[in-house]
Amino acid sequence: MLRVSYLFMAVWLSVTCSSCSRGYREPAPEPPAPKQTAPKRAPLKLWLGGDVHIGTELTRLTEGVALEGAMGIVNLEGPIAPGLSAEINSAGVRLRNAVGTPGILRAAGVGVVGLANNHRLDDGIAGLESTRRALQSAGISPVGGSTRIIEHASWKLALVARELGNTSDRKIAESVRVVVNSSDVVIVSMHVTGPPSYLPSEPLVAVVDSVVSAGGDIVVVHGSHAVAKVERRADALIVWGLGNLVFSCDCTREQDALLLLLSVTKTAGTLRIGAEVLPLQAGLNGQPARPAADPHVLMGLLKSLGSSTLTPSGAAFSF
Picture 1 (spheres, rainbow, N blue to C red):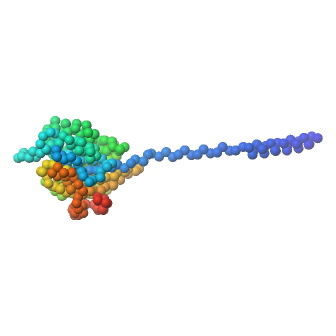
Picture 2 (picture 1 turned 120 degrees about the vertical axis):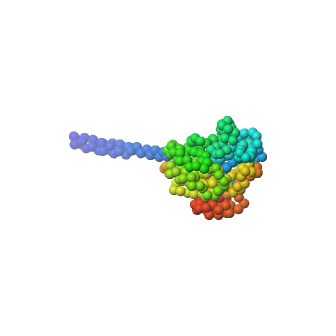
Picture 3 (picture 1 turned 135 degrees about the horizontal axis):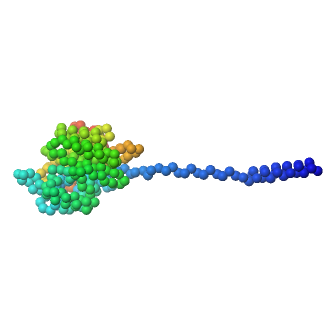
């Protein structure tokens, strides 16, 4: 009888444990948390134009040029002030830009204006300060003399604008060195004073070399009112002359001009600058700048001056 009881108990435990085993399920593993990645930063879109002087008759900066979505940077020759747009006498040329200049610049997408040039004091210190205020009121950043860092579309831009005259100023390189590690892109605008020339002077070459060595990413030369070669050097981009964009004063008649179009990306600390030049007919006599009638003629000139390889890209040329 005892053996039967033991046998019954063994069978009951076997059935019971088997039933428990069939009813138990291991918890399903939790899905892995989604990998956190930094949001991709949109490319920085910029355009850079040449020398600008706006008289009362000018109503727009460009015509037939697609600049939507890009921020413009130009060199403004002279203060914004009422009065004659230009006075030419034995003492030289004195320039003023029309009081409506900030609105015209803003309508074209200009966000930064270089004031470091030989006409910045044509209305004295007071004229320079009032020009700064007028630009800032229109949402435009004036740059000249001191380095400025601005934020645009999640990018931090360091802007250095200097007037060279006819001398070499290696202090510009130190200004660049100071901001290299605190900005995404360093843009250097230099203004030279002298007659129109396709070729840079030796002092200018020395300054550009020092600026690039110091970490300048984009270097643009203004002031001669003439176009010059475009160049890629290692990771830097150099435009030795953009010519006039618009110039109401008839003290310059240079009609050939370039517009520099940039798309900048930065991945894992590596900066990449996509660059195109758009040949223009400068806006003279109160007219806006327009695409050149025959862009290949101007590109032929740039090639003969030793530009980096230029590849047709629609109406523009990439390099």
